[in-house]
Image (cartoon, rainbow, N blue to C red; front, side, top):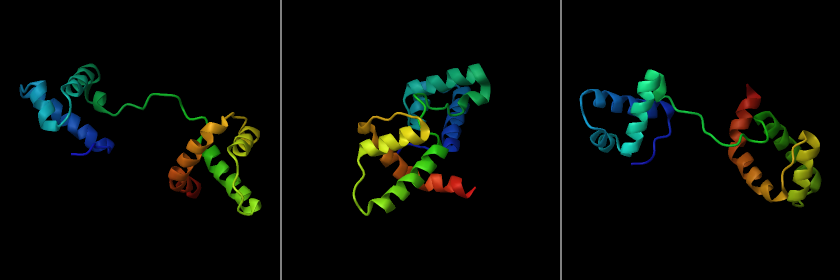
Amino acid sequence: MGRIKEPELLKERRRKAISLLETGMSQSKIAMLVNVLRQSVSRWVKAFRAEGIDGLNRKPKSGRPPKLTDEQKKKLIGFLGTMIDHSKGRPMSSTVIAELIRNQFGIKFHKHHIPRLLRSLKNKKSSLEDLTQK
């Protein structure tokens, strides 16, 4: 069974675990039935007892926020498209792209991080295009 990623399905699984707990079933048995670790069930129970049903909602991811906003990423895609048109097929260096970002947005990127940024832009290009159409 693959990992569930849809927030509503995750919440439903957590609700199911809580309802099974209320019938008197052990956390270990519940974990086997819903295909998670016992520690996950324990965490859900603790959150439910502390916050009620809202405690079963998915928590935002922790970690450092992205340096570029979605709006800046959208603009960067436009800048890169223009640069590609003017470069006549010659590849752009990571140093040039990092300099573009610094000049346009005042944000420093090390040249070694540019390939990762470009991959993320490629993966998110369709979602960024959705933002431009709204």
